[in-house]
Length: 131
Image (cartoon, rainbow, N blue to C red; front, side):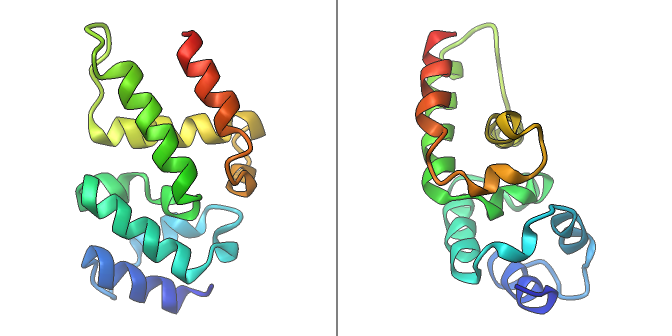
């Protein structure tokens, strides 16, 4: 995917003006941003817009590059573990950031977590339930 369709998609889904290039520049810092499909990013944005604000999504914009099923499962596990806790009180923005952290930690934050289409979610889910 190139910049132009990406800007169009962000404009259509998040109502980010086409002239605002900051979010696109931030997204382009991910080493594999060109490999994510237009349709996949669109579906991910639809899912995120149902549950998060535009500001929360933009703060963690790289999450749109990852598999929706992986993100959904991991977010559900994180919310299940931490929503009842009196020790932790996370905002939606922090849940998205924690989700990115959990996906990328096994690949040493190289961006290669994008290739895990659910392979690591079982491992991550079991790690979450142990803690």
